[in-house]
Length: 295
Image 1 (tube, rainbow, N blue to C red):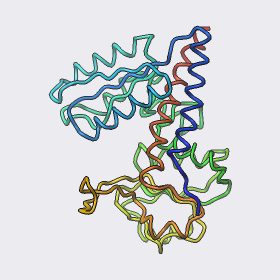
Image 2 (image 1 turned 90 degrees about the horizontal axis):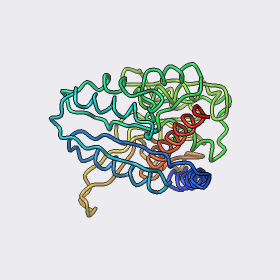
Image 3 (image 1 turned 30 degrees about the vertical axis):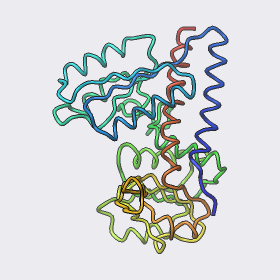
């Protein structure tokens, strides 16, 4: 069993991006800039935004975080998005989700310029992905693909089962793995909460992407010998033996599933670090696209 080490892989990719940025600056270019908008005081969202800000520093980007109180109106938020859309000095824009209930998330996402949509959530970018056209891919699926590529995992002709059908992970990774290429060229099955006898599907899978949001859902008897397992889930579960009173677990029962796998991601340290790093990759692609249009 080989660990798909997202932490090491992401650090290697960040070093590549940082080198690319320094070469751009040495040639007289400005630094790429990512702006994040945070509405409200959700603890997890604050952590995510702080991690993204640190990643920007690591790769040499300029960054800014615009913080709004939880009672900010939808109109005020949309006005700020319009302002950033028109700012030539900003390359990428993210609005941290979830948003307060009185704000329409879909409306907010669709008001972000597709050319600055580094989260890859805008319907225009999602549509291009479905057609196999070059576009911004949402960071978690992009990170999974980069991890498979980094470890030279052959996906051609393999049967991949994706657990979960979310627009952020399940659907886009299913599409990416079915496209021509490597990683890609998979036969993909999507399983979800209404799928009957899920274990019958997972036992036949060469590759399993677990993004179902249920802690330790994937058990040993649901996985065949030699499978590749990518665990997207991350949940805090109470643990009195830990100083913080909890531990982090994924959607896979790692202790019992790992011995059967050829490759498996740990939680934490697997997909998570890749997600933020691929957001950086999308940002520099935004920057290069804008600069190429000027040329």
